[in-house]
Image 1 (cartoon, rainbow, N blue to C red):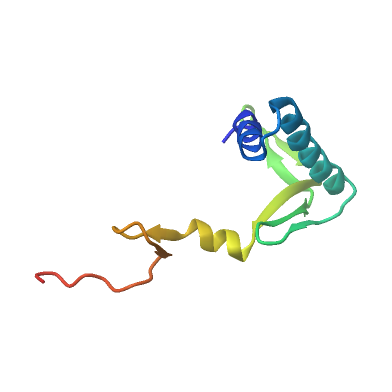
Image 2 (cartoon, rainbow, N blue to C red):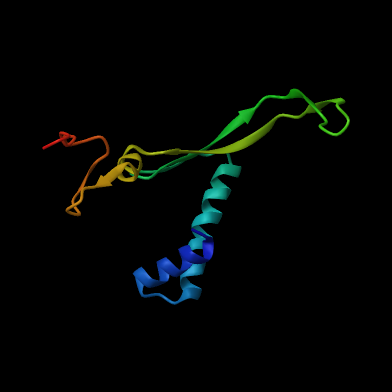
Length: 112
């Protein structure tokens, strides 16, 4: 899903204009980015959490020349999905259209 598709979905579900929906989506993204820049953790219950991981400095190689180079330390944004999100993603649909957890239910017996 692209940002434009997300704006379209927010607009459709909320009966807002696309312009208003775009402001909402942009505000949410900017708020997440600003919080991460301040070193804060963002926790969205039932969805997941965003946090920063620190990568230590290391020695790397220039792939073109093979020379060793120093790679400086850096912060990497990391998303950890919540339990509810994982469960929703891993649900499967039965032939009758009912939703059941993945791996759940009994397997059909061959030959019956």
